[in-house]
Image 1: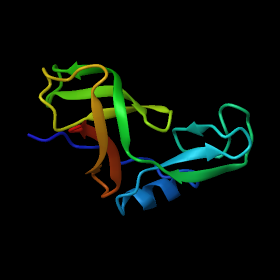
Image 2: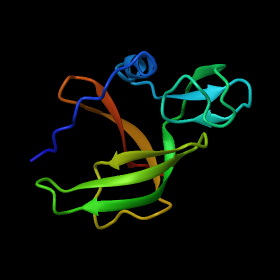
Image 3: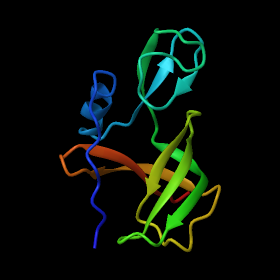
Amino acid sequence: MKKEIAAPVLSAESRPYYEAAATGKFLIKRCTACQKNFWYPRAICPFCMSSDTEWLEASGQGTVYTYSVLRRAKVPYVLAYVTLDEGPTMLTNLVNFDHDAIRIGQKVRVTFETAVNGAKVPMFEPRAD
């Protein structure tokens, strides 16, 4: 049985992200004032509060910072923090893993799973390097 993915809430700030995700592109935000990358999509930089931000196509590569296997759920799943190669750490799900083989520091790559409304949601799977 596959876990049903909830529909993300679309806003003016997140719409460009989900439009790019629909085409297989993984975007993050970058502040042009302080030059820091950040996740989740928002108009104001969380570091310097500047509104001078832009979309940046990210590599979709990252490392498992920490994770938890939720085995009591009807369909077990993995909740994790992944640190992107571009710097930000994001809360996400790990998919296509043997739940007993996941390790902190493991290399992962983005994959897009389809939510109930058809939106593409970023999750991460093992990377072979």
